[in-house]
Length: 65
Image 1 (spheres, rainbow, N blue to C red):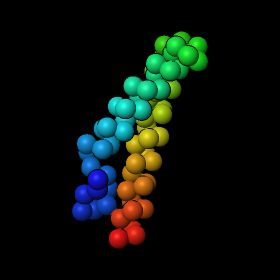
Image 2: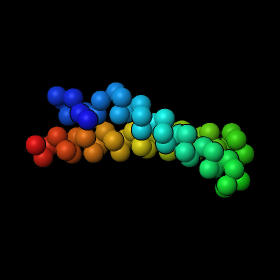
Image 3: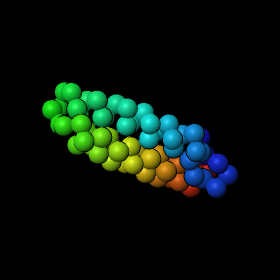
Image 4: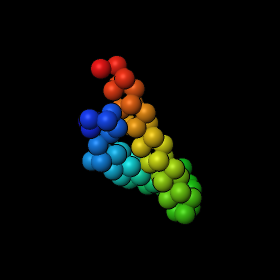
């Protein structure tokens, strides 16, 4: 979902951040063997990448319309 300006809505941005963080952090901490500080940092970085991806995808989609 995008608003009139072509940027993603707040709900989709926060959703991308939370879902990515909640998936990446436990996987990094349990399956990949990172300590929990590293896992949280990795989850935060992955979440920010997901938000940037959502933003860029929404901007690209708004340019096509």
